[in-house]
Each structure stands twice: as structure tokens, then as C-alpha cells.
Image 1 (cartoon, rainbow, N blue to C red):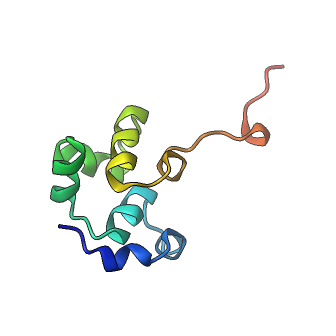
Image 2: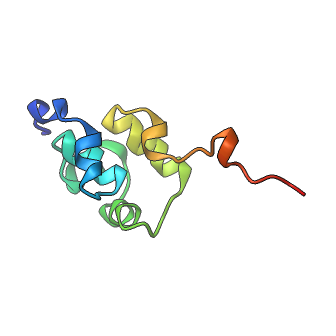
Length: 88
């Protein structure tokens, strides 16, 4: 089971070291990939692909965010008004 004492560590600190936001959130909350797999119902390989940047399926990211109890926005990059492409 995850080590809840580690959940107090800020994702900002871990993310500053260059980790993928999902990996940062997972490690902050003390989950192994295998534990997260069991909690969110995704295969270990799917989680590895997401952490490696090979998959960014929003539905999978929502499941993971729910399992880690983090806001979806921490894992899913939603374009802000300033960053949205404009049509010419």
C-alpha cells in the first residue's frame, strides 16, 4: 500500500527535478507502478507508456488522477485561453 507520509511532498518539488507529472504524482503518493495498476485498472504497460510520454489518452489519465486523488489538471494538459491555437 502507498506510504501516506510521502503524500505531503509537493509535486512541484518532484516535477522540478524533471519527472513526468504522472510519475511525480505517483511517487509522491508512494505508489509503485504495480499498485497504481491495481488501483486504477490499467495494465502496468499502459502506465509505463504514459510515464514515458508514448500515450496521453485523456480517459486513462482521468482514471489515474482519480486513483491518485489528484485534480485531472495535474495530469491532463488543458490548453489555456492564451495557449489555444487561433484560426486565421
